[in-house]
Image (tube, rainbow, N blue to C red; front, side, top):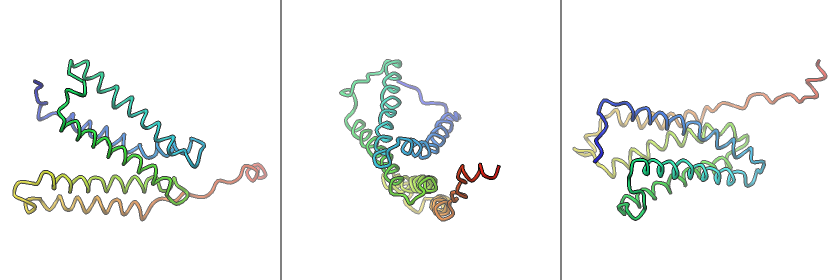
Length: 187
């Protein structure tokens, strides 16, 4: 039996910050991958295919190695069905969300790079709100809805406001670069 981690450990916070950084650069890196495929029509699908390869490397080979190193039974038939199915569903909704990011990039007004932070801000402001309501619905607080502190509701409002503000006041692309011929004539 594994022992629970110490309550005063900040490992959870470090791992959460690792996720913040990873997911914070995800949209920019994904957009760069898509646009550098050299295929404006199918580049996003090629990029998503490679995201799947990366998931295989990180999310399949990594845990298999850790399970094997820990001496744990890693075979699928040893997994409790409820845990197996919920985990597969979680992976499915995660993959659908990643695919949705690429589809949003493809449907965004031009120039798309201006909309990358907008799309990701909507996602990262909206996802915690969805998570909060689904968590409350699946694990209701003791004392009912009235037991939820007002600061929680303020946080929901601030998350929504943050996404809305980033969307409304997105930075522009700046002035268009001067053609090389115009630069040479000045010199």
